[in-house]
Amino acid sequence: MNANQVSSPPMLDSEPLTLPDNASLFTRLRVALKCLKLVRGDEGNPTYGQLLNICLDLNVYESLVQQLQRTDEGRRLLSERPSLQGKELDLAALERLPEGTLGHEFARYFRDNKIFPFETTLELKNDVDFIGKRYRETHDLLHVLTGYKTDVMGEMELQAYALGQLGIRTAMLILLVGTLAQIKAPQSGVGRSEYLQRVWAAYHRGRASQQFLDFRFEDHWETPVATLRERLCAPVERMN
Picture (tube, one colour):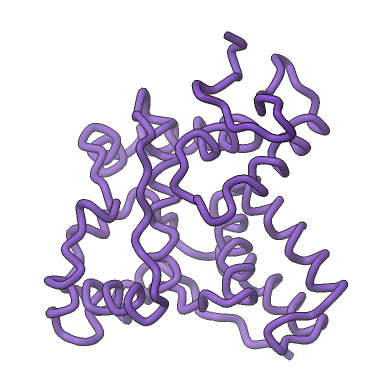
């Protein structure tokens, strides 16, 4: 098997979707775009997620692992590999916590948006796999923490935030595709100028915020969201 071919590869046009050895940037982007098309509506699919990581973010996650290994909290996280997958969460119990707490607002976020927590069957073979999974399963927590909505505009703001903070290239690709679509046909009642301003502001907010991947959200269900937002997130920039 090719070193960059994942097991049980997804199929597109009757051909396995794989990444050749020493693939060029163009090839990586082409395969990543196909992955994004296939993963839509199946975000927890381990094959698509793993191949996306290989295409765009493998070295980004490797760098993040190295950063985490330099701190006690980071080393603890990598050693224990806590999980925020749906099967680990008791949303009913979390929603019984006081209003305004992270647990209550997180559970209400899923109820209000009629969605379910992230799930994947990806086997964690190393720290890079864990960080890739951790990034994806904290996505909904970041919606709660940052205040970005789950509509088109809010999703693009959160991708810009993640790009600014972590340099995630998948976020950059999603932003590029989404921005081109927005320029062609504005959505959610947001004009082109406002859209670009809000994405730019979210990117800078991410750059100015504390890194969140080593934060133990599991230990803070009873902490007010406002307290965590002040601790982890830079203020929202005002638009002119």
